[in-house]
Image (cartoon, rainbow, N blue to C red; front, side, top):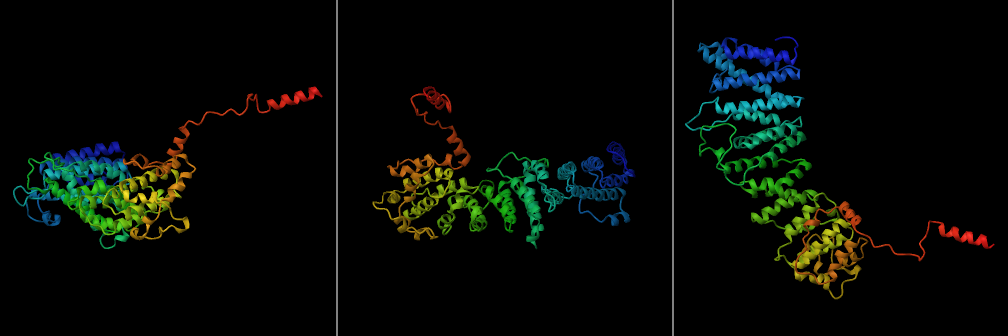
Amino acid sequence: MEGDFGPGVARRALGRLLEAVLANRGEANAVFDILAVLQSEDQGEIQEAVRACSRLFGALLERGELFVGQLPSEKMVMAGSQRATRKYKVWMRHRYHSCCNRLGELLAHPSFQVQELALGTLMKFVQLEGAHPLEKPKWEGNYLFPRQLFKSVVEGVLSPEEDHSLLLSQFREYLEHDDICYHTMQAATDVVVQVANGHPEQVPLTFWNNAFTLLSAVSLPHQESEALNFYVKRAELLDKWKVAHLKEHKKAFQLMWLSFLKYKLPLSLCKKVLVIMHDSILPHLAQPSLMIDFLTHAYNMGGAVSLLALNGLFILIHEHNLEYPDFYRKLYGLLDPSIFHVKYRARFFHLADLFLSSSHLPAYLVAAFAKRLSRLALTAPPEALLMVLPFICNLLRRHPACHILVHRPQGPELDADPYDPEEEDPAMSRALESSLWELQTLQQHYHPEVSRAAGVISQALSTSEVSIAPLLGLTAFEVFEQDLKKKGPESVPLEFIPAQGLLGRWDDLCAQHFTLS
């Protein structure tokens, strides 16, 4: 099969070679011709060769014509005096390995069509090799899975050089199967450690992104399922197999994420992990408390990363009884002017509302948060004020001891306000000695809705809280649209005789003047 030829010619030629190899062992050397086309530079020829290899080795696996057991050296077997059948099976098993290695290389081919076809063929081999193992069971009922072949597939999709987000979206379909999901977690753990060990700072960003895409695609059920969905079909599922138990899946899931997060990740990737931490990672861990190191490190970084870490910390504190010293002090420290402008503003205030909902919090702490938010409100945009003002009023409703902030008989002068905005410790800020004069100032705000919201403190506060959920995601555009939809006041008459035009009345007066003169 030398020379250049089109896909149509290649298909026919490969078809003849394929039929010859499957029909007669004496034609086995034709496998070299089929494998040679896999090295072609023509995309169409490569695709035809991949399909031919899929049919060829798929049939050989089903027919049991590949050597089973620890694969010996090809030279040693071929030079020995062993039976022809054994030599054929060993020789063909080596050709099968060559084919799988080349298919793994094609996962990095410039053409996505070739990548997709190579992935599908390799996963077909995983399924067939699982059903017809190429290793001997060590004992009766031993669970066998082509781990080495499957690990090469995971290594291929976790490329350090190529962005494989599109290929990973295809691989994601296989994760619906319980056995593939389990072995993906094990293989991904090994690959991450293998690539990052030694010099993690030299690992390309592309690899971390590919790894995150794969890891975040793995999801586990919340409860043990009786009906398991296996990709490799089994005559029966034995209860002693680890792959059949959710508990073992959770252990593998936990080890996978811990192995990934122990390295210093790029800041952009750290944010992505924190976004899915609370609902896609923590609920599936065998021991969620093991995430405390990563979450506290992220929380101490400040800025948007700290805001995102709040979700995970909230779950660990409220559901797993985690004791976090100085938590409220650090939460208080996150309140700065930028809090009203960050992307995750809605999430932060939702969580802050939950953290400050307990009636057992000391009055000085709640007063410090209310005072800090009131001070920041003086420079906040209207869309943020429409959310933060009800937030402050809800704090006062929950904690009657803080009503003194709005009912102090004689509030402090502005230049003598005892509150210290520079103090990092809310207990030392002296907020309870101050008043919320900022809210009274906002009653003169240019936006009528803000002025109305700030005016609530001048009245007796109702006992029922105001839900801030609809206000959390309010944007400047939405506020502007609401203002445009409002009906303005009816027009006010300015003179008894309606004007007939811009200069109509002036023309009449001029005409009368010239007539009289």
